[in-house]
Image 1 (cartoon, rainbow, N blue to C red):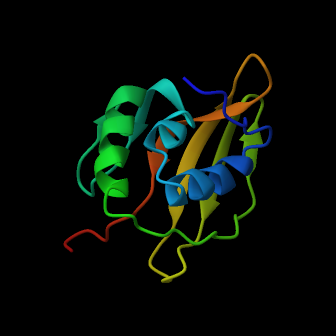
Image 2: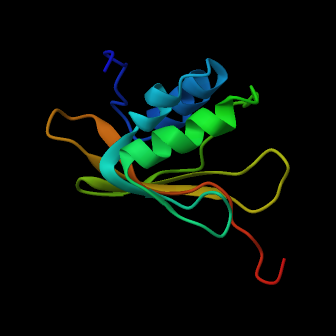
Image 3: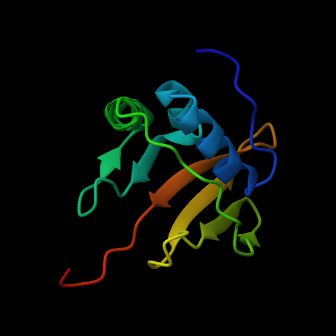
Length: 121
């Protein structure tokens, strides 16, 4: 696996996600997740594990979507766990991630809820 820039603050993960997604780098996106992370995507489903997340992003990025940076909301941290979030530019809900500090001081996603779906929609 190539050497990727590490997220040294929880908020760095969102920036790195946008950069790697826009570069079409599914492996780079997956490298932002712990080995057994859970991604709530596609909506209503769960993708479990870094390899499954990489495979999912290969499919998504094949369509060459463009992601715009979203300013982070304040991070809520307790020790080696943090909750990060951003308000989507379309104003629909929020995105939230639980991240964990790694032994080298970097941060990786453990849980990722990129879209909140209103019940009944």
